[in-house]
Amino acid sequence: MTTMKYINHSIRFTVLAALILFTASCHDLLDEPAENRAFTEETDYTNTGNMILPLIGAYADFQQRGWEDHPLIAVRGDDVNHGGLGDQQDYAETDYYRYNKDFWMINSLWQNLYKDIFTAHSAMEQIELYKEHASNKALADQYIAEAKVLRGWLLLKLSRVWGDVFITESSDPSELLPMDVSPKDDVMRHISAQMDEALPHLQNLHPNERTDIRGGVTRHTALAVKALANLELKNYQAVADATSQIISSGKFSLEPDFYELFKIKGKLNNENILELQYSDFGQGQGDNISHLFAFYGPGAWTPAVEGAANGWGFYEPSLKWIKFMLDRSERTRLETSVLFTNRGINEIKKDPNYATLPAWISNTTPSGDVINDFDRALFSSGKHYLPSNQLTPGRTGYGTNKNFTVIRYAEILLMHAEALTQGATGTGMTADQAVNAVRQRAGLTPLSGVTTQQVMDEKFAELAMEWGIRYYDMVRLERYNELSYDGRTFSPNLIYLPYPQNQVDLLPALQTNNQ
Image (cartoon, rainbow, N blue to C red; front, side):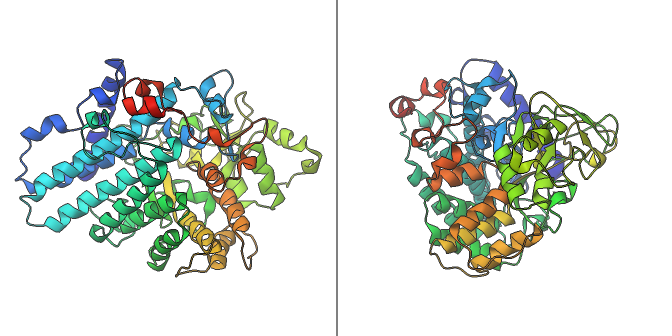
């Protein structure tokens, strides 16, 4: 069985398991056996040629992110707004920092992340069993390290969203019952230490150089996760140490065409450090592994390729961010990141300061798709848009065959620059060089003597609508006033989502720590 076919099979199995999990009973993951646990007694661990299979299963679960995961993680920043008109009201309320602990998306995000963490643990445990019989024990250590990095990223997301969370130690969900949650800083230190454990065993490759699992975890993925964890801790020297190694490796470069970075050309791009991979296998029908990008797409359009389906319109760039970009005379990143409707253009013009807009702003994308007015939103996300002329002929689903970027080199460069402006020392690039590399691609003039504020502005411009980066930056730097905009009022007690009530009812620690 080829790797891709196994991933396809694993994803289908995971989807089936998830359906059982959510429909067979009112209970959650804690009532289910760990992924693959029921099959371990039947597995022949002396057949070490199958040692990669538990790892592929972990990748399959990781790649198959629930469509609700990213929107809930990302919607609270001032770069993005919910799109919604009388539908998914609690999602809209979350955007306004009014949280409902009974909201199904909050519970689903918790379950999705922890389910995949337990799958990663299961993979590590099974690989350890294969390792006892393996002649190449270093390969077993590499596979375990890869699963550890996937787990680290998932735990990072959990703690960013909820703060104090459980640090799991095995594939058995019942271990959470007597366990207490760990403070967020301890979680981040744990993730950093786990990446240190993984690093010696990982390949020194760009993910797209791997031949066994294309796009899989390498040592640079672990360094990136370590940098992100230490950024949360404001341990800027540790951030600079990790980003310096990524930069000095020479393995990564910025994609010259920012527009195409988020399209088919962006799949396994030299800029990407971690991405969720999807494929229709180049065929117009049959097997298709895809993300539900329709969530992000415009509710109405006239596609260049007739028959291409529109989206749902639930996720839009904020007017605040669009005006910020116009003030900077941005075109490359603004034109890429925003799908404009005529109604949205007119809304911008209502502000006398923006009554005259650049001629290039249009409801027709550079790829020829016309974005029509629709009720739910004024704009749509261009970073989650695949032009209709890049769909495989025969495919009509919005965004089919597009990958979902998770960590890219531009973020590493800007984290590196921020750490240096915060007093850290590093190698590979100066803060000016890192920021100007990103600015050059955007067609902006270089800066000299960059400040932390300039770095944060650059992150705002470059990374908008991606994984809530802006929100978590503003929270970390305590710039809460930025998050109070367009009718929203933010305060420190609103940083974290409440624990899902479904989980509070099951887990004693959440009952005593409920926020």
